[in-house]
Length: 259
Image (tube, rainbow, N blue to C red; front, side, top):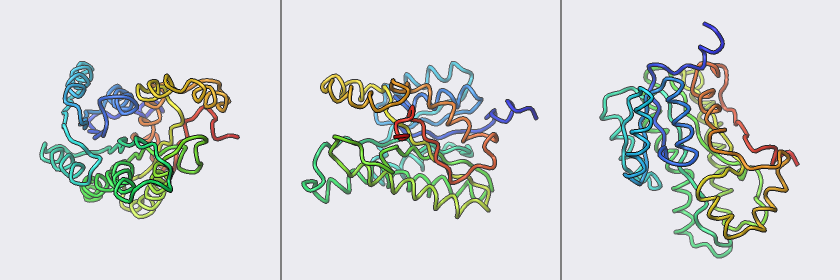
């Protein structure tokens, strides 16, 4: 097998949460271009339908599941629905997450803290449980958790440390599952994105141009990432090209964490 063949995903199915927009959509696109069929999960049925049609045009089978995986019950519903399709799921991409709540740590309620943890951590745990078990039974699979550079560091000038805390915990879950599942044929890795030009970030920066410039000045490459730049990393971690890689975190941040 040639080196480029190792990146192919023909005959495999990838389950991608938040797969209709932003970084999830970009990773789904890359996985499909590498040959994978897809199961996309998202809250908005309209954007899911658009993504399904666009990705089906690549010659892939694409199923869409409307579900809110920010809650444990919603995550389980999405997984149960995917399993009911009767297709083995070879790749799990836990992409859903976000800061969403801009409040100082000393003021956040326990209920809101738990809600943000469900979004950024518990949803991924549930998907790993529900879809990881069949992978373990087959002795093969790849899990990709989308963490953040905000896991190991506190982002300057931003409130809402529920995000940093949950993403750090997701990185720890990634390492722990990788250690537990390695001998059973399932690899677990993470991608830690830096600041990307997603639609939510564009809207956020439009209201805080000075803050945007502060972020930009901290990136050695002098620019924000574009979602398509995350896709190749997902293909690498999903495919046999990374067959000896587990418990790893791929940091993709333009050098943000270099200083």
